Image (cartoon, rainbow, N blue to C red):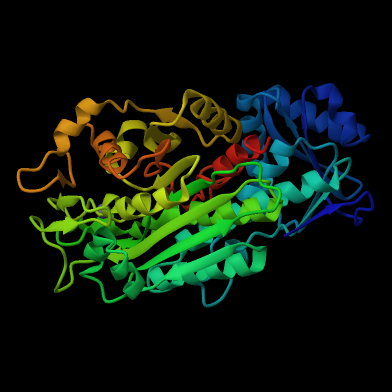
Length: 470
Ligand SMILES: [Zn+2]
């Protein structure tokens, strides 16, 4: 979709806007009939979008008494933008003009204007957003471009998540990273199975034993000449391109959406692409270990002991707790960068989703309070909210194995935290673990989330990295 900064708007293009009070309606139309129709609507419903036709052109007005410069108000504006996208699509409008629009309204409208259509033999109108142009006035071109880039990076992540595994396997995910690096100007190196073996990444290799497709380990690096940080930020994304659970097989319906088990990897790829495209002056490295997890003939079995790349031995007691096995090798690999901070994103535990639902991401770790303060603020600004969980060493008790250094599952209680404590074992730097199992995938459309991958994490990370540029 094109966004135009233009005051010359094609005739017949509908106008839309959010009004703080009914009196402000003159900003959208001078037609007394249109204003009377809006006032009658709001008198009945109190709020929401209302359409009126004025000289043959539709005008949409939303009475929304919220301050878009607060996190809560901005989210109301985003949701209003999503509702507007739905109305414009229903009316088959191809363009809209938004006089004096707040960025949050435009962001919600753009984020909602996404559908995954790649697998339809014939693209039908109802499956494809009708809107392909937004006209804005009074914006700085650089602000417009930055918003466009952020939204496109979310869409990149969503599409990778929405691709089924027969379209995007571990090699495909690595290729997508290589393509993005080429297009947006950052360095990408893909390790094949031989190289992964030479690095003794026993977690990634073990999870891959049941698969017919070889694993990949992808390193993305964006290092601008003007980087303000001497030590990089390292982003690690779980890239399980499909998770059957392995021999600890998932029940049928729990498997339906498991193409989304690489949502962490998609977020990392989206965020590194965004940092490069926005030209942020920060040195960022992305690490993506990738494989599918299947019960093949040679699949890792409960009771097997794997030796991870740092030498730690792990008793595998549940082959469906595979994400932490591949992440452990990536977190160990991150040490060679002497990183300022490592953040991993992973659809790691059902326990995280059960604890707080799809409303937020479960967060924990060892980073400084200053990092936490910035990260939590980014979460609230982008409405990709974080809920900080405890990270006490007491939980390590639950990961003790009788035959190896660690076991890969903690038991029935505190499953999200024991997963995080398992990962912490492989770190020696300031660390944040983000369990995105709740918000990564939407079973049905919700506001500006289309059904499918949400791309959660991309806007959060780009906002956070932007705060670290001085
Ligand atoms: Zn699993």
